[in-house]
Length: 73
Image (cartoon, rainbow, N blue to C red; front, side):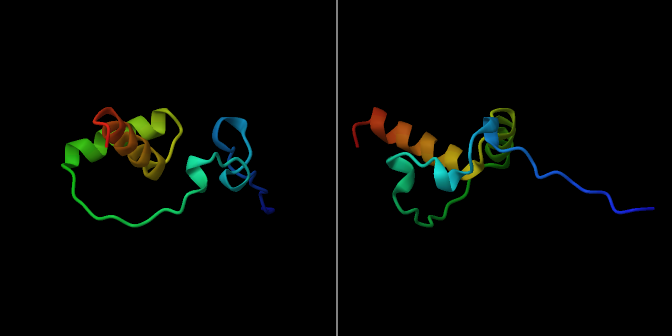
């Protein structure tokens, strides 16, 4: 058998990699936080992220930002 050439995975929604498409909010440095969520919440997050082609870090960042914005914090 010969070697099989594998194609690279497609980028999200056919756009360029993250390093080249950052908006103003995405260029801000990220910091590590620590916390725990229920296993059922994590499963729902992972399902949503997979269905909407986003990573968990971006999903969590957006969710927390929306939560705090609604509370004018």
